[in-house]
Amino acid sequence: MLQRTYPDQNCSIARTLEVIGERWTLLVIRDALFGLTRFDEFRTSLGIATNVLTARLDRLVSEGLLERRAYQIRPERHEYVLTDKGRELAPALLMLMRWGDRHYAAPSGPPRLAVHTGCGGEMGEDFRCRRCAEYVDLPDIEFGQGPGAAP
Amino acid sequence: MLQRTYPDQNCSIARTLEVIGERWTLLVIRDALFGLTRFDEFRTSLGIATNVLTARLDRLVSEGLLERRAYQIRPERHEYVLTDKGRELAPALLMLMRWGDRHYAAPSGPPRLAVHTGCGGEMGEDFRCRRCAEYVDLPDIEFGQGPGAAP
Picture 1 (cartoon, chains in turn purple, red):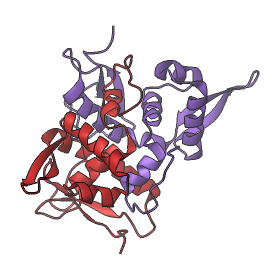
Picture 2 (cartoon, one colour):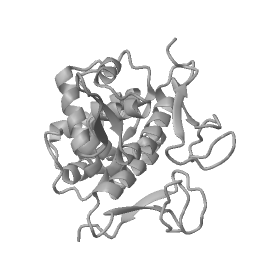
Picture 3 (tube, helix red, strand yellow):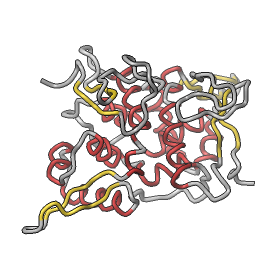
Picture 4 (cartoon, chains in turn brown, red):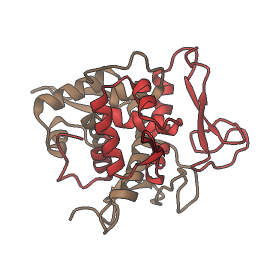
């Protein structure tokens, strides 16, 4: 996916970027965390070319972040579902979201909120729920509309 | 920096990627968190072309993630120091590092460890120190060599 690897970079951040360090790829993972599974859903959400999306999805499947599953036989149709490995990127995306909320959100507030499944409390920076004060681990984080969401 | 922005993406992750969603940029921030400040240090660490590095640093300065400071007058020399805004990306990089450690580290272990400044304990996934059990906030996180570091 990247035109260049980092053979002399003995660093887990560099290795991670080799896999997910391309702008669309992280947005595919974001959309998968938000519940999208189908090719057309990703394409509509991201507004990218079909061939680019195909390449990104194939790469994420081959690296084991997404699983490609048939959900219909005739005609054959597939969906893309996050694996545990893919889902484990949620904390990193949550931290990127927090940073963007803090520095680039609209005056109306953040467009999305990370909330504690079931409880509904908003996630704090330390992965504790602001309502029940419990430490919230994956997969008990979900994303809902925030005050700055588009109407 | 990106050839394309996401005007219809009302999302703090997409906005964040507009600023830092380019593979070199996150590695510049990583190196700045590890203590590098000078152009030649970044260039040696990253092995990238001078013009590319100049563009990345300029962009990070104009977005307020780095501050360019003169550290010598004759000849004039500058260093690049993280602002608070730049430093606030540390939790996101820490989460990317954890993910890479888990899925792509060498058998000898992670090349770097995030540790609690002063205490020296390793940071847990929940931002608590594994030695003293305290919640560790920025700027009390620093990075040290891990068991998988290059000799």
